[in-house]
Amino acid sequence: MHHVVLPKMIAAGGGKVINVASDAARVGSSGESVYAACKAGLVGFSKTVARELATKNVCLNVVCPGPTDTALLKGVAETAPNPEKLLEAFRNAVPMKRRAQPEDYPGIIALLASDDANFITGQVISVSGGLTMAG
Image (cartoon, rainbow, N blue to C red; front, side):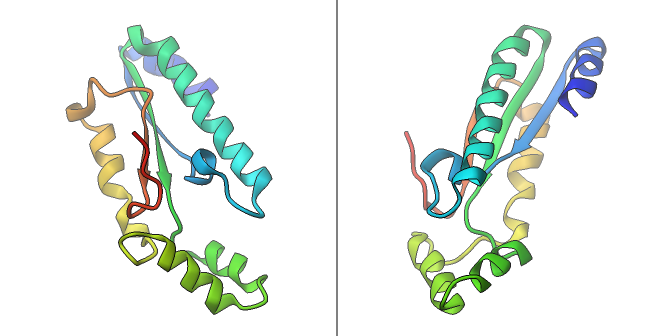
């Protein structure tokens, strides 16, 4: 996708790319080594391309969701010996004491896609209810 879209953005004078990774890329996640490694690769790729295309007015940023109530999370939980206990552990690990909802993400993505973010590039933003706080 990047290979096809980025040259067109450059030709058009710039643009915004918001990649979605995972907080697993930033802090790891037990039992998800391949998933975390793939998401970490997306973070590294995004930062590198953001640096390379900064002078072309192309901004790339990454949003990293935390545990989110989706069918995927429920499917992962079902493989655990006690699915409800695992889902409760996810909730309790988050300082806001809830798992994210899909509706928690469009706002940050809309901001990063807007003109208000014209000077933001190469950033990784966690949307995790405080689960991962990094300076």
